[in-house]
Amino acid sequence: MKQAAPAAPPHMPEHATEGAPPPAPERAAAARPRPEGVLVIDKPRGPTSHDVVARLRRALGVKRIGHAGTLDPMASGVLVVLVGEATKLAPYLTAQDKRYAARVVLGVGTDTLDADGEVTAAQPLPAWLDEELGALAGAGGPAGAEALAAAAPRIAAAPRIAAALDAERSRREQTPPAYSAIKIAGQRSYALARAGQAVELAARAVEVRSLAVSGASRGGPGAPDAVAAPATLDLELEVSKGYYVRSLARDVGAHLGVPAHLSALRRTASGAFTVARAVPLDAGAEALRASLRPLAEAAAESLPVARLTEDGARRARLGQPLTDADFSLAPAHPGPAVWLDPDGRVVALGALEAVEDADAEGAERSPALPAPRFSVLRGFSGATDVRGNPAR
Image (cartoon, rainbow, N blue to C red; front, side, top):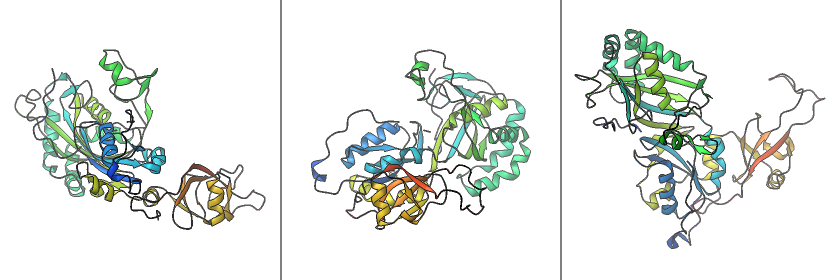
């Protein structure tokens, strides 16, 4: 049977590519500078990430647009949308950590591991689990630092739930949900699952940076059949790229010996971009354009910054290797960095090349070692932002 949606889900909203060809840009926008930069959208529950991108393509009148980290239809919150040259940042922003507020229903499992799926299992909670949820129930209210502080003393009275969360914190690999966009022999996993095929996905490397209880509720009379009052566990977490919060619900339930699924999910941050600075999807074209963050500003907020000399900027635009002499502020570490020209425009994403037989970290460089060299990873045109000004 199709599971009924839980009553009054909390204001909370997981992880698309654009398929359809873009429409022609709006004529009214033809005379304006083309929109370019990063737009942080507060995605509502319901549309897919692809739907959001398609809508913004029409609203902004642009062709080049994408996002950095998919959110499932049932999820809400931060969706980082990349416009124009900013689409080149996608691999780097997608790889950054994410923060979520999640609600897990205990005692009911679904095929998709979330509230949009078909119920596959339901069972009453054991008495000990109901009691532990009762010990945590007073920690409810708005998710955040206050709720987490309130829950901390109570978690001692819920030792088996605490052990389940400890097991998740120590996780280094996670099996993705069968209903996911991962490809198997060229086909999406969810398409195979919907066709009734057994899907087995390999575990993927993940990390849980933090995980804490922010609230809980005991099931109503006759639970789990009374879906209007399910037993729930509210969690706040920060995780690495590739982590599925739907799998978290499944695995916590398995540790507690009951079926479980995710009933609500809200992404509160993606890398440096937080929901507090997000704009609603229905804000309107002018408000959306005004909310675009210039490429240089958004890139510098997310990645280390290096500054080029005039000659260094010229060499970087040609894709040539660079040395220390090409920077007024050279990259300090081997990872990707944003390279800005003297006027503050993004010239490239680049990286310090690894030096073989280098001295130990922190040691003074040996004169016998070659001078460090820097390579361009992605080049940029240095276009102006939506306001018609050079990005600074």
